[in-house]
Image (cartoon, rainbow, N blue to C red; front, side, top):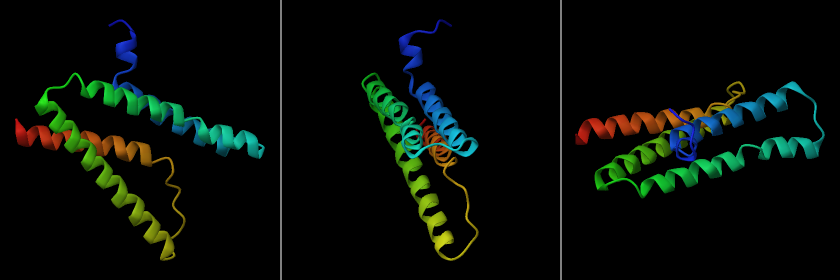
Length: 127
């Protein structure tokens, strides 16, 4: 398989690149002491990859038929709901006095897994 622009702008590829950039930024922040300006630059590092993922997902919607659009929309809704549930649950647990849970690395992966589970569930139900 040749590496072309269409392969590199595929939503699963851009999602993995985004998750990798979040992991890299987190590792940089934890491994080195950085000045505040450098920390800000490292924190902003994943944002272009998030934008690329969003644009590639929207671009791929045009190529889908109505059934595939329905499946992907349901998968994204499921991923959003699962991620929101986890974020609110973690915040409430921390407010209740539970030990601090270092969770910032988990959110991109949680959303990706939620999207995959939502897509699998919707595809199983509608096909």
